[in-house]
Length: 229
Image (tube, rainbow, N blue to C red; front, top):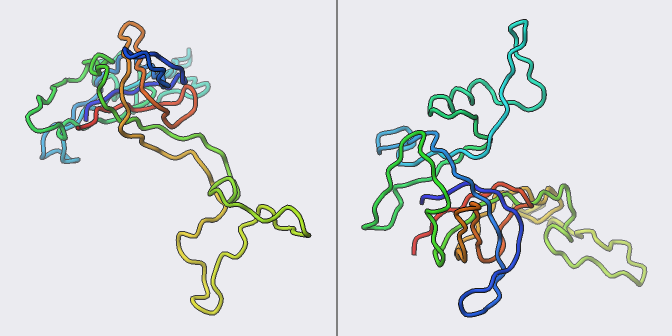
């Protein structure tokens, strides 16, 4: 479904027409340029989509000696060429593709060409959306924090307060079963929250007020897509 790339600003509250207090997540989605159009069933991915860009990157500077002087993170030549092919003056910081061939039956499929822009006006209050973000990375964590284990007693001589305990069977099958919940990397994972309602749209400030919480930290990149039904 068609959508837009934005930045999560944080959470606040709004009051709807009935006077109910509604917790919302504020997403800033400035106009996204269309970098590429993927059209037709015979293309390599096999579906119709548009590739949108968000933000901007620095590019290489030309020195007096004729060599670039990249200081810090700068766009690669491939990224710069990809943006120039679409007629963009800046190189987007992020690229995301949105499918267009999964629209509801009878709906008009929008048509775009490279260089067009998509803004928050594609959404309307009361519309249902799904938001994809990257959850906060929490590093290597134990089973109590990662999986919610209760842990052991804190008294009576116990020394295994936050340890997982036994992790595998003995003679049969003599191994640790696949999928066993163990300590490990927690967070920093892609997560999609569905059935979220758009409470308010502010086209002048490029803001979308979405009911509920979405994954990711403040200023984290999110994708807001229309949802069927």
